[in-house]
Length: 552
Ligand code: C2E
Ligand code: MG
Ligand code: MG
Image 1 (cartoon, rainbow, N blue to C red):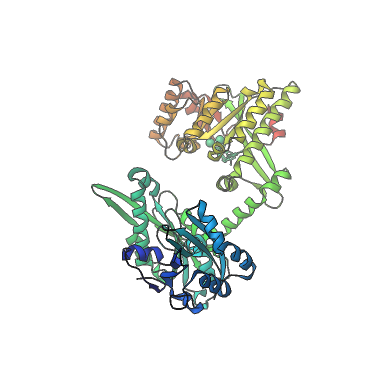
Image 2 (image 1 turned 90 degrees about the horizontal axis):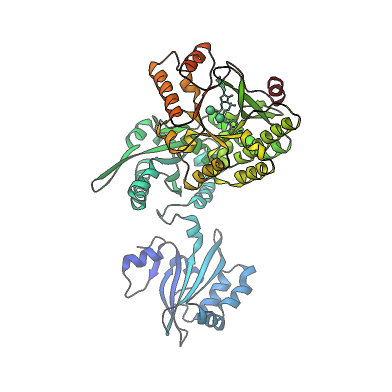
């Protein structure tokens, strides 16, 4: 009936409802007669009976308040407690409000617990006095009744002190592939049902010692490593959600961290289990991955790099490199792409592939992109002032930049100062970033376009390409991905697609840059296919500002 064990006296409330209300969270539910101050215990948690707070020993409000104070309330709160539980004061408060709530911290066997004292008016004759353990709310997930993130971490920390967990146990993290689609297509009710399904599967199949829902479709648990077999995952990973005539398949993926050293923080273990799950990649051929040493080292490197961003910016460790883009027919430099490089004092030159994705996740990329925009503008400004030749330079925008209008605002400000600079800066946005832009972010692009800034669609043809992308926004330039270019001379199909993409782009008024051109053969094909511009090692590699100045 009641999880913690408790004494219930009630007449009219539906049993199940009452149990679910008091289950776990309520320590007492007591009714008080206004006229006499007499109490009636509707529910009292048995755990509280040590203190003598029960129907046999306590009959008035004053007694209740005093015994509770002396037995439970932490010393530093006793004075405040006396004031706000004073009956005069309670009456005064309830003049204006129907319900009066105060937080109180109490001493219990295993530490201090946070509770709510809630006094509410039932009618003119009665008040209801409840004591609610809100530590439980903080520790538990309201939806599944399993632990929440906070509850998991504190509970797991406690568990790790038990020598039994020093070997043979793992921390497992879950992710439902396609969960967002299910929420979008079938609505949140179905999404919720999947969360319940998932919880039941995890409890049944992984028999966790501890289970929590972190958020959304992400559960985390501590369970015996020997249970985590490939056969198990193969069996439980593919699932189908059925709602009437609708059937939606989804897949559960698991990231596993084998606990070798229980002294590590729980966050450390969780980060690595998540990392393992992420490493499975989009193709999801595997349903689970275990965090190994390589992943772990990569992760530590990433964390280290992330922690160093601000200092590195201040120390001017980031540099802007330029890769010239040439006219396909003449070979003349017509523009350039600005590419960030991190000249790290210990690691040497760090490639953006190593830090850009990590910075995107942590929200640092906009600082870098903002810095790049500033550098590109300053570079061209300086050259104009010196009366030297200038070409437009393109800065890469990350998906994240669209959620922080600071970058756009600052760019507008910078360009307002120099109206002649507008033509000299361009922005590149990758096809995959463009595909997931939301309405507001899209308007950001429209605004830039209205300012006369050229926009390039980067990496076109990589991943989930769709020709319709070209049609949905008036990009000035389409950049064919180097993955495509490398297929020249290898795949006739790819060659046909390149030719047609160039034709199509021209039809809608966009120019085409081929990226990653490395060979004579590729160049010849692209010229033949009427490609406008070429970027690639065949002509130039990315170079420092000084080198770029020499060839411009
Ligand atoms: P991207 O924007 O597609 O840049 C082109 C990448 O291809 C550059 O790599 C460039 O060095 C490389 N590349 C150019 N020609 C060739 C070639 O002929 N062969 C080969 N194998 N590679 C070639 P890089 O500089 O390592 O940059 C990688 C990616 O990192 C960029 O891809 C871009 O998505 C991102 N990135 C670079 N700088 C920035 C930045 O300042 N901000 C943001 N948000 N992303 C940046
Ligand atoms: Mg680019
Ligand atoms: Mg590119």
